Figure 1: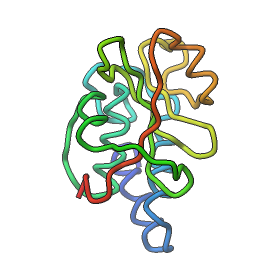
Figure 2 (figure 1 turned 180 degrees about the vertical axis):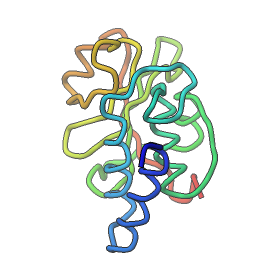
Figure 3 (figure 1 turned 60 degrees about the horizontal axis):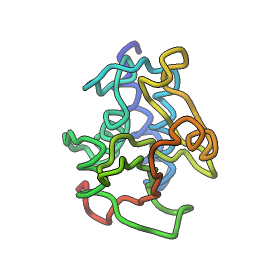
Length: 152
């Protein structure tokens, strides 16, 4: 199977059949972006940007077709949450005006899928929270969880 989106859809189907929860499927689908080249406006593991990786993951998980920027994701679809273990999560990077200019989906524990033009040599890369903070010191990082029912 050479089409990465078909691979992701097959992964979702297998995980659903085996009883995996949405949180586990979200994390495994995000991992499909490891090594993905940064392409502004892209939305596949062949090339995408930060919000493309999160939107595509959610679109495959919930069989939708929503495209949103990091700022729209932050303001419309994600909300504050303390429960990082059982939620579909992301970390957003806010500029001085409070606008989300970057997003990295949470893979679990303290790790995130970072698809960023700042990492052109590494492409989509799994990063810890501390590594992300060091890469983007000019931004305020906020943790958010997907709002219940927001993507459905």
